Every structure is written in C-alpha cells, then in structure tokens.
Image (cartoon, rainbow, N blue to C red; front, side, top):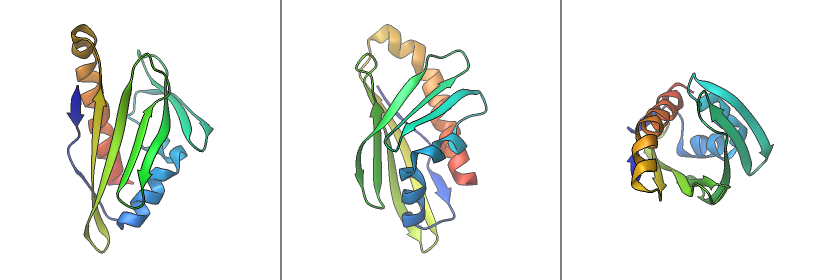
Amino acid sequence: MFIESPSAKVNKSDKEVFEFLSDLKNFEQLMPENIDKFELINENRFLFSLKGMPEIVLERKEQTEFSQLILGAASEKLPFTLKAEIKPLEENKTQVVLSFTGEFNAMMAMMIKSPITNFMGALADNMAKV
C-alpha cells in the first residue's frame, strides 16, 4: 500500500525543515486533533496513538541531510515506513511530501486506508502551519 500526502509548502529553508523533522519530539506539533497520546521514547523513537487506534511506535530508520527523513514502525507486526521528502523551492520556501508505504493483507489495507490518508493529510496541513 502506498499513500502520498498533498505537498506542504513551508515558509522555512530546507535546512530548517529538516532540522525540525529530525527532532522527533516536534512530531507532536504535527499530529492531528484526535491525538490520544504522544510520548518521546528517545531521540530516535516516539509512540503515538489516535483516538480509536492502537499505539504505534515510530523510529528513525534513515535520513539524508536536508532532503529526506524515513521513519518506520518499530514493530514487525505492521511493517511500514513514513518518508518525508524535502525540496527547496526558494531561499525560505520548501516543499514537503509525505509518503506511507506498507505491506498489508487486503482486509487490513481496506480498514486502514482511510484513517492513514486522513492522518497523512493532517500531518501535511500542520507542517504548513508550523
């Protein structure tokens, strides 16, 4: 399953956006309104849950300075990644596109597609406001 957010235009440089996203505690500011729990576990992991959904632990998997950050599920039960692609548009204007990639059976994919799409949209919307 692959889901991509609408691109977010952020009025900051690619370096500032990358540094903001690299500090995982900042993801709390990007979470949708229906966030139930957010906890920074360490500098490379955080836990969150949305109302009516199970807790998910995301960890930093890979990063490329100023252009990409990849987070992945810490559990092998639901293997997926959340990737942020960061592209400079102007000196202080950056485009960020989030993508979700996961391997799920058809039933699971059908159940989570809408909530994940809404979640990705909320992250992108909130990123443009930060």
